[in-house]
Image 1 (cartoon, rainbow, N blue to C red):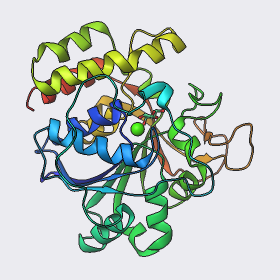
Image 2: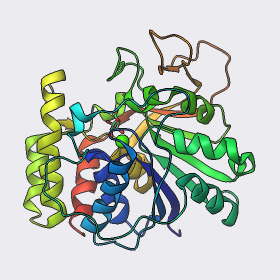
Image 3: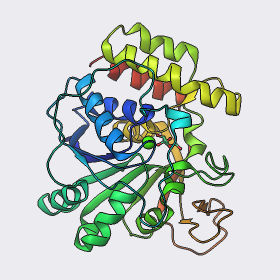
Length: 313
Ligand code: BDR
Ligand code: CA
């Protein structure tokens, strides 16, 4: 099978960085057409800088990186420096990027690429707020039917939220955009907190990254060292959850994940539960399924894959 063509839409973020590294290390399964950046964990100037730092860390300075939307559709930007640090990529000491940002807006790149490629041949992989994707769908409705699939990190149901009691960060930052994407009719695969909170970087797993003794392996270990303090304090967990790499791991080996094809809708009205992914896990409504909503992960298999692929960089 030829590799799957993807656009990674991202707000790096240490876990976004690992997701990008995994994709770039897996050319047999994944062809990264481009990386589009969005404001989220940190403002856009930093996410578009961090994405290029990560491409250079992977030894892939030719990847096309675009800057996109600098704020959500209808709300002020909420950021997460309390998790990711001031730069968004705190932890390792990585050089400023020398590769350029591409000319043009990320939204136009998404539109142009979907129009240029055969229908059903491009998968979108959002790892941050869904502002760029929703803006592209609103600006160019003809592209919606051309998307093969959207595989995204966002939401949570049994696990609740991580930025409010009911909302996960990526969906909370731009619920309006998430609502557009979840109603778009494009087949969705969703990696919610229910999955990603089981993908924990325990000490032995982080030692395995460090033991690769490569720039990428060491940087990932240092990112995790930084990132884990937040989750350890908050949840008393064994290590940091690697949220976003679940998306790129799914593209390589979907059998690592289990879930249900169900209806998922986004709360866009109530201030109390704004951005909640209302998942009909028990199928108690007759609302049509629109998403493969994951709930389980083979965490050992996931970390084995990640370590094996990072070793290639
Ligand atoms: C999501 O929010 C961000 O902080 C992470 O990068 C991930 O995409 C987890 O809620
Ligand atoms: Ca992210």
